[in-house]
Length: 244
Image (cartoon, rainbow, N blue to C red; front, side):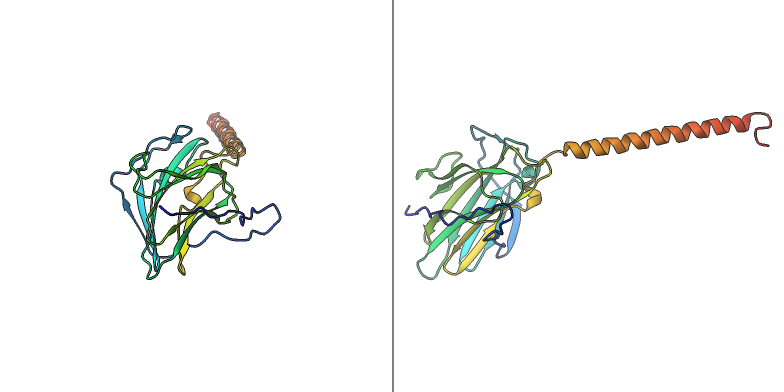
């Protein structure tokens, strides 16, 4: 397989107070979803794979096509250390030879870690018959929307990309992040990935829980005082001459 890794020197990481250079790409083409049959899923050695009920999404551009398989419902409540597997197939049907470039971007406040691997044939469980091409390992993508190059392929090839997405330590429990994989080349561009609400922390912030608990306690006390006052008033009305 004659793919070459793209240089990532052009990556610009957004710092506080500095405008980002590029934004996450918009999805191009029609998208459909439905159940997926026989998708291999096994836990990575260093992570707990979230129970999966995967769906398939297809984005078709003028020449480029992305097929995505993942369980984003499970990803919506990832705990630290949990992992969701994302399998993508990139292909092209171009009128003339060209190069397809694949990149990824993340935008949000929930810190993530990614393992990205590529195979020239469909995955068989954890096995790639033609040999695995490692792209990223334990990588924390910048969270400001910059596109980061992963790899490239000829338009005659089909790339089977596998990304294990983990929630990293840190960040607020209510944080969210959107993730996109983009393929571009020969004047075409397509992108696919979960929205921010599909990659979210799980649980409530301790501050939110404290405020909520305080409000519940206050309402409970007010209710008790109201009932006690009504009971005493009823007792006085029942006494002789109490209603005079």
